[in-house]
Amino acid sequence: MTITELLKTLKTGGQLANVYLILGQADYLQRRLKAGFKQVVPTEEQAMNFASYDMDTVPLAVALDDAMAAPFFGERRVVCIDNPQFLTGETKKQKVDHDIDSLQTYLGSPMPSTVLVFFAPYEKLDGRKKVSKQLKKVATTIEIGNFSERDVRQFVTNQLKQDGYTMAPAALNELIQRTDADLTLMMSELPKLELFALPQKTIDRDAVTGLVTQTLTQNVFDLVNRVLAKNTAGAVTLYRELLQAKEEPLRINAILQGQFRLLIQTKVLAKQGYSQGKLASILKVHPYRIKLALQSQRRFLLTDLNRAYLGLFRVEQQMKSSTMDPEMLFSLFMTQFAGQVA
Image (cartoon, rainbow, N blue to C red; front, top):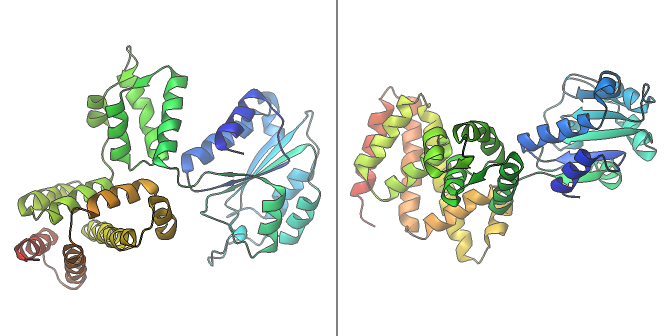
């Protein structure tokens, strides 16, 4: 089942399964689905027949007791389980002990009048664990991981249409660029864009450029292009602007290194014939970032990419071991890099 199908089922009051697994790190979709599940319980019954339990603070047994109880003066009970880390291979132990055996017993015979929903904000579950295998077998799974750029465009367009708005293609392109095609960020920006577009209800590119701030990653992507173009003045100016915006120098440098590492990886693997989708899977990077990296790496030599990466590694070492001004360190890096001959 797709998320669109599930949202439609929740909205229209269609037949629901007894167990759902919502798997993926898209925060907006996690919140929207939880709101949808809550709405299937009549408002006057929600206090008694809807509950959400965070496994970081509440024992699993408490949630299962609720799930096994009959609805209170209603037809259905909805129980949500948040952060079920015990389904993953993460080594960080949760502070609360969980009765996994009882969960396996419940999954063997779910309560017919209960909809039990696992909200798992993870890339994947640990397929070696018996309970994870059983849950995947029993539950209706909705994967909301990294959406493709096409999926993001369609989702945002559908939401705008539902709200009675239109967005110019150039505006949508700008919104995707400024948010790195992050659906959660894009949806958080829509309310102010829609408010600004009243009463015409048409969102243009000027509205997006004026109201939506670029993410740090996107700013750093622009910085990478200036570095590789050996535009020393432009690169130092943008670096200074990031510092003035209170961005941490070490964080800027880390993201810069990450961008160059990604460009190197995509350049090497693309030569071996890997597709955009395969690269996203192997490198565990959002498909939109892979798309941008593939477009950029073609314009630059691997030697320049390697030199920039190693130069930034030295900048990081100097930041950690000296009291030199970060902007001065970056300026020296740019001067040296721009003066190198391939």
